[in-house]
Image: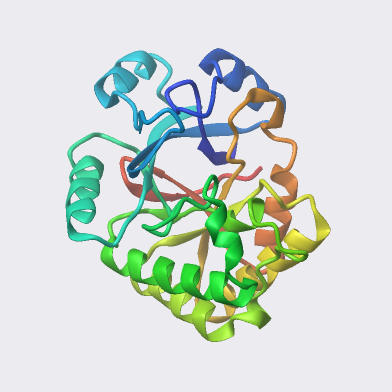
Length: 262
């Protein structure tokens, strides 16, 4: 069975998913799961608490479930400042994760979810800053396995048109995708917005270009925080991968494995 490679249980600050419920729901859709709990050294919750989890307790709690149907990973919030680079890399390499997702949830000065100052920028300026920062951050953090939700900002912006399209930022997106490919990092087809036609078209334009530039592998991630979203949009992500002859993969013991899609 194929893997949905982006899932959050109660170890993530913004999720309350029970592992038994997650596995039960995944089985309905003939899916396996990689758990990827949030760990953002450069971010805080609204009450000031850190965005992290007790890694040793995570492995202890889920060790009995780990196997063919469930793998244990982490979603690291990336940063391009030296201290965060060192600390994130140490976290990734000093624990027995199956898979390490890298994400950009903020641009140092503001959080893309909660800080509304981003909306004082024009759409062109905001996405230009975001893409330059993301490319530089991936260059500084090449140890990750896949980059999650390139369209993450689209969820929270308040422009009349929030869609990130390749044709609007071709040079910046090319630079970003080249950096992924040169470092053998996968691009994630994130399913959060894929059922909305305009956002799907925007993501598809980037996925298409990734293939044109030589990208071969993608991960398909629901970014699930509750069991009711597991599996529902997975066929849309799989169809996009097939359309552009990209191979869905997952990671086990930090090694890339081609998904068995039968």
